[in-house]
Image (tube, rainbow, N blue to C red; front, side, top):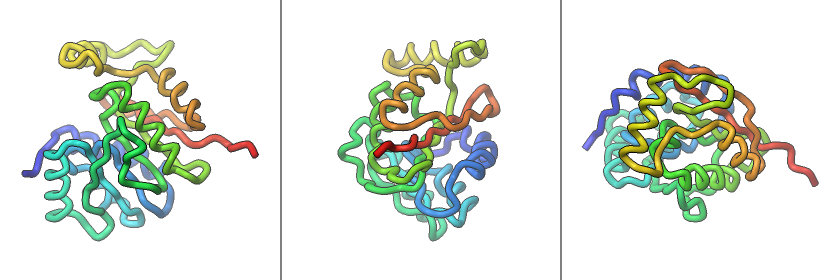
Length: 203
């Protein structure tokens, strides 16, 4: 029932180092598209002052997350909930203090990213609460790594709606929902972590 994603072991320490700088000191972190669940239990242990809420839309992923939470999770990791990023109006979570999404944006239709940002705008009610995205991205004025170009081609060959996204498109989408990009972190293996926070709301 437990799934294993080798990348989770390789990237978790680097991601945690960034999360340590960007997450709030307390509260609930909603992880969208938790996959196997390995990140959820590891991050919950790494950040004992935070409550970690894993989620996914795939029943097999939910089963794997539940198995990790039951066998390896601490008191601050909740049982997984079903969340389809493409349907933010139906999210089974009405409030969070941060949202983390790791390696989903490129392995999902663009509508999933649109729903993710819309959902984040609904439940991140306080100013400066972060939406944190990790994965490979293309960036204007930056020569893409050959490995990312090959990866993008393989993704699009598997599914025409998949593919590495351009940061500028994410920035535009975020701005439509009241967010601005507050940070960009270089990560190992030609990945990035992007941090979006709500802009000052005018009365």
